[in-house]
Image (cartoon, rainbow, N blue to C red; front, side):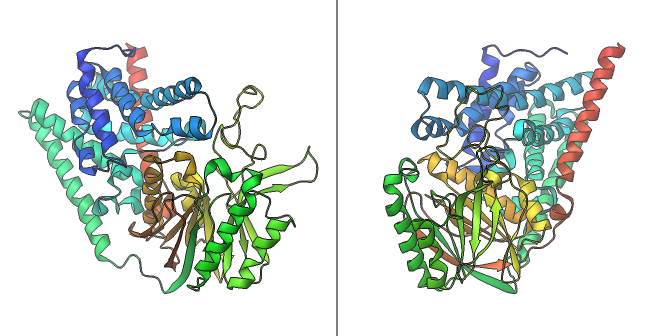
Length: 506
């Protein structure tokens, strides 16, 4: 059961092509049809190099999809280029290992139990994606299903299976195409292909059926203004720019007030100071609700405790009422490792955080914020890529999801658009409206059908005002979560145990 460790040979050219094709299916390429056949080149040679073929494909995919990490680490994180490249390559290799593990297991199952990859690989692929979102704090960025963000009929099933059902279908279709090329004279191949065709028709048919319904209509609505301040990341925490930055947000909010919104939203860490304190700038901000007559949801750092030994810091969102009173605070739950905290800090004491902040952040808990009889579920920054958090807020009564983020870290790259694509799935999974305020873009309003109703360009001062519906449909996904992914993981574990038993019993 040894892995075929990667070595360069001509066989791996096709897997690399697969990785590149898959990456082009994601923003900015956004050529989503490529994902329906992009894995075929790798599948054609997978049996020759079971692990290496998947691993090489993963290297090509993640290296090209996550190139923007070097912008984050060098341009804004201040990390030396050499160390940035090393960290980037380490992450790419780690993530590519999930591809390699899935293909290796699929080949072993075919060899030991005659289970065709058409049957096993979709299950193993979803299990690997799900594990990737859990292990080592999780990094479920660029799951295969997200490539279909602009194929509306293909992604409506997310209200049942989450994004993982879309990934499953894409891998199954790729396997069916590869099987036709490799063994089209085998009757079992045609039986498998027929099953995949039926699955695809039912999947897309479900999407068209759901889209024929009025998914976006709600009896209650809220007029929301999203304020995009476009503050340069290098200036954001510079005290010399503090007054100018806050004045920009004040002026944009006063402009937004001309459209009579009920809620005005500022992005993540819009105030580079503690809004909870009674300082000159916090007083200026707290006067805005009374001037505009609107609720304000404002991203700001927060703290609890009175001494250095007891103080805890949070990446938070504060809700202010129209009278200026502070109604509540929601703290970020899923923190960015090596950005907002250092995992195993006692061991990795030599690693500096990438962000310029006030200290190690602590995790909060699910805390919906009340607005006129409804509740807001606040997802801070990349929390929106974790389906379980959005689901927890909606299950807890939130009738509107609000994503506060600062994508200035990404520069002019594909990352802001990749981030937005994942946010669309959170709206579909829970059939809830989602409003997204980003410091430099993309700010957007997303409907429960996953449509982008309004959006802003990158790196422009902008106020985005739109009505959003209040209230969420309690979908199968909202009620039961990732049971589909759990099922794939369970089946994968059972198959893996079967391989181990065969290995040690022989």
